[in-house]
Structure formats: structure tokens, C-alpha cells
Length: 178
Image (cartoon, rainbow, N blue to C red; front, side, top):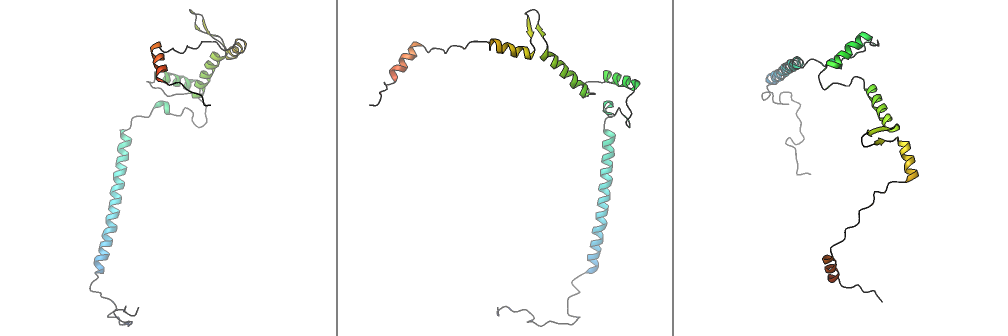
């Protein structure tokens, strides 16, 4: 590495006048640019903050009135009295379609009761033709006693005679190995 030499060949100056060039750097311009950058950044942030607040106010103003069915009918743990219940029922009856589900637990209970009634009781399907829906338990007993109904299987369609003879002629006889 002898062929690489530093420009000052290991000699360092301690002279304060010649340590660096002060004429090439404009410190005042650099500080002014930094100050301009900080002030413009603050201004941009303030403008964007005002813009977003204005857009939020416009959005809130443009929104439709909240759905009255969405309000909470229980306030601070107090139960609904009969007068409030009447108002609620009147509101539900006059509210336009599609209506929100007010009491989903009650609706599910009613659905389950109707399904259990249909599954566990005799229900007329069609009185004119005499069709009756049996309870599931009774239907299972009948299947055990009588077996499954035989609806029959459709017979395999036979190929026409002309195709059968043509197939037999095209295939050579198979010989068994000896």
C-alpha cells in the first residue's frame, strides 16, 4: 500500500486560519431555509387541520337523521314502562320497511316454537288430499315397523337390436389362455 499516499502526506495543520474554508458556506442562508421550512410545515399542518375539520362538519350536516329504532330504549338501567312500550309498539307499527328487528330473542323463540309444533305434532298439509305431517318420532317408528317404501328402480334401457348385433360383430371373440 505504499503506492497510496494522502494529499498532505501525513502532515496535519493546526493553523486555525487554514482549517476549513468559510467563504463557501452561507450559514445565514442555511438557517433561513431551515426557518422557512419549519414555518411552512406549520402552515401546511394548520391548513390541513382546518380542511379536515370543515369536511367533518360538512359530512355531519349532510347525514340523514338517525333511525329512531336505533335509539336505546333503556336508559341507565331503568326498564321500559307500559307507556313507553305503547309508544314503541306504535313506532314499530308505523315505521317504514325494512324494519329493524326489535326483539330478536322473542322472534327466535317464536320461530323455534313453530318449528317444534310442526316437528312434534300432527299437522294437516292438505285436507282435501288427506296429506298429514307426522311427528318425527312416529315417522321413525313407522319406518322401523314397515321399512322404507319401495319406489322401485327404473329398469336399465335395452339397446336396440341393430346396435347389439353390430357391437358383437365388431368385437373379436375372447380366447382364454391355456
